[in-house]
Image (cartoon, rainbow, N blue to C red; front, side, top):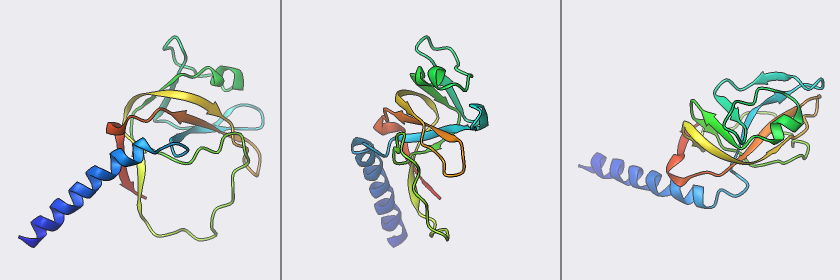
Length: 144
């Protein structure tokens, strides 16, 4: 009986955490669509993210002007949500990996894109970062 109570408590806390996260997502509502090389080529492009323009057509170009026109993304799998860095240079992470923990992700499907940024990488190239409008029902937690 106590296992049932513990399982129920865990399920309720998880169900409560996802909507609360989505409501306050703010700067933690970005995903990475890929990386651009210094020659403005995809290097690589994330396979589960399809970029769509205002007309609903796929955007496959790697130039910043075409990418700035992205208004939606179609996700074929869950994508990790991260802090939005904008056009700033990325901060260095720790030297050793941390322990695995639950992190927010957005589930598959069509999602509106608020803006596109290009954070610079320290060793050349830039990321293609999408700031999303994250619906609460699409937020899940995954162990990473």
